Amino acid sequence: MRTALTITDIALAALVCLLVLGLMEVRMLIRLRQRRQRRLWPEASQVIARYVTTGGPPPRPAGRAGRAILRDAAMQALYDLRGSERDLLVGMMEELSYLGDAAAALRARRRAVRRRAAETLAIIATPAAAPALRAGLADRDALVRTSCARTLARAGTQDDVPAVVAVAQRDILTAPGAAAAIVLALGQSQQTALSTLLSAQAPARLRVVAAEVAGRLRLPELTPELRACLHDGDELAAAAAQGLGMIGDIQAAGELRDVVRASDRAASARAAAMTALGSIGDATSVPVLEPQLKADDWTLRAAAAHGLAQLGEPGSWALRRAVMWGPPEAREQAEAVQQ
Amino acid sequence: MKILIADDSPTIRRLVVARLEADGYEVVEAEDGQEAVALARSEHPDAYVLDKIMPKLDGFEVVQALREDPQLGAGPIVMLTDRSSEEDVLRGLELGVEEYMPKPFSPHELTARLRRALARGSGS
Image 1 (cartoon, rainbow over the protein chains, first blue to last red):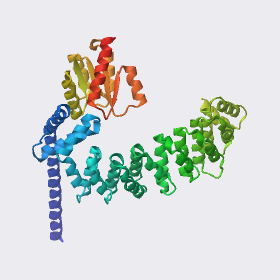
Image 2: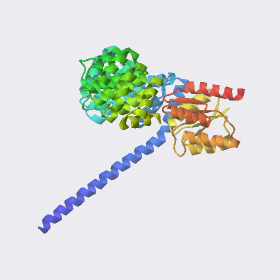
Image 3: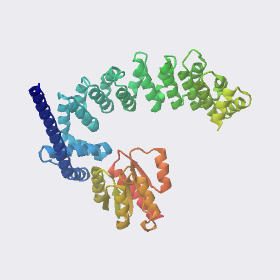
Image 4: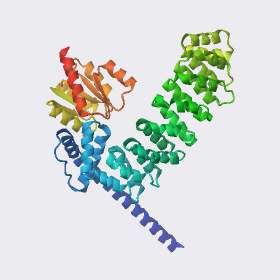
């Protein structure tokens, strides 16, 4: 018993020693790397600045460490630069094979390496990176493939849109933020793709995101699709109403009023429609909004009051009527927005 | 003409310095807001390029310190920002920022704006 305990103790002590030694080595490596970075970074920044300002042949970094630091410094600069200086720096990255390295790293076994490569390609975002990015769309890691899809949405061609949309569809439930970023990138550079995402054939969740993006980017060419979404599920109708309000589509006023009147619809959709009518500034909607000041649901009362407050004199009169003669709950909302 | 550039990113500082020097300006560099104010007092630059987000003192605090010191004159200020929110622009204008450059930015455009701000200053 005593011997067994001693052996266990020794084994445990050895394990702890090994762990401590391992940790010390990791700390030492990190310190060495930081020291090397502090030493080489100013020179790398200087080289980049000179190249971007005066042109000439691209710099030749010395050794693996020098090459890695030059890449990191260039990446930092690319993040903050635009215009001709950015183009020059992208050219330098291509000429020094950083782009090729990242494309190759996108096929690495380790997920972290592939993620870093996808990040590099996202910052460089040049058409030359497109073949590697297309291959990355099939990556088994969601972060890698959504990053590639987002970059292709910005830097790719019209032909890439179906594959990019397919990634957004695949990941909308498991990585909703990343999928939404793809839809946003599409909205910024390939607006026709949003039209496809708003169609009834697209997955419901993706349609909601597309409607939100269309509104935030204020894309008037998508108002027919957004109006069609008003007749769909409540979540989509709410997003579409919000979008139509942001765009200010007066032609949608009739359909938005129908949503407000539909007592079988969710309060979120009806409230969004009222807010949109206010944003659009459709004063003919006052008779539809005014009764909602007495609704049972306070979100409807609040949205009605906010909508009316934006409808000029007719809306103000409706609010005054509620303050003077309305039931307490209507008076409360009307007074709140008037203040 | 002497320009003070304050940015905590050495890479961005180098890029801006190289561009300004190529355009014939003399440049002094600061890596944080406190150093920027100290350099402004010792070097008396004619104009400033300030990053909005910096350690120790942010861009707005530096502008405030510059504008409150009667010995520092009223050289034009160009501010580099991550995003030009309305609130930031209004605050900057109130403090006396002449130009905003949202990042990502072009150093070429930055020097053009600086030249314009300097010309406006000397014109008035």
